[in-house]
Image (cartoon, rainbow, N blue to C red; front, side, top):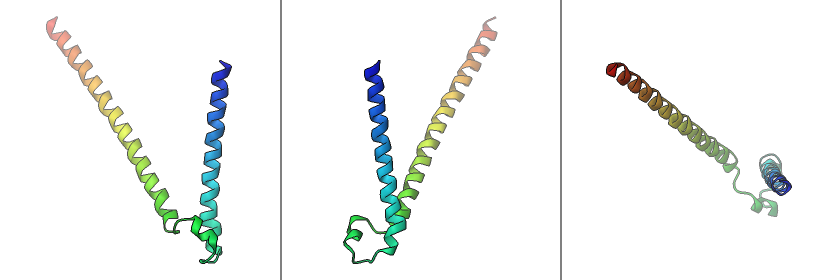
Length: 96
């Protein structure tokens, strides 16, 4: 059990480090880089600033599509189960 707990902590720590690195990169890119000269070598480490808006918008749209698709599939399956139960109940009444 302790081996699994250690693995969970390692995965959690690596996810925290990755999220912190992405946050730091994006923060420097969007908040600090506009004040740096355009010919500075630091500018070559980051994509054009227009992507600072495009990337989050694309991720939000994709995330919304995934969540909407999940809800749609769950609702369709739920309605199918309800319809099947209603048909079985109706068939049981006809046989009686």
